Image (cartoon, rainbow over all chains, first blue to last red; front, top):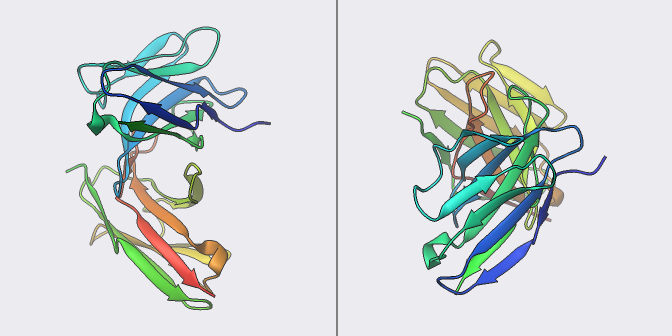
Length: 113
Length: 112
């Protein structure tokens, strides 16, 4: 049973470009969570999604960030017009239910130049 | 009130020694406290977790001690090994919810 998969593992974008981060949850998991980890900091919750629904986006910046989890395909975290402050590791986690343990993917390291 | 404070930021321990990482929380509604281990380039992986109805939980060389009145909990790694070198995160959460509040992490290095 493959774990949570994220791609790309590393992403370099110039300021003003768009970044798209993908997350495929573990088989049988329909709950996806995105976290951001800034250098020397812990993980910060961004958004919680179920298939085709955003359940909680209270940790998402109000502008430029969006997330989706379509009926088919991976969950996508989209950052428009990236700025240097967006440079971080973005982790996706999945679980079979809301009250279940979250399993983390290897992360995508975004560098904005 | 949502913070989880973790210390130390970094820790160097000799092989065979005891590694101790401390966390303190503010939200008294938290009733689930997991510890995650993260190796470079990897995602965090659940190591061990505790609920406040017990004061200690042990799994192999890893032990969580929990002090509810002080709102503190700690991870002890006995007989530390170089393979334990990683970043460790504590977290707090309310059972049945999904929003984990993570500490800032402790970078552990175990010298051979």
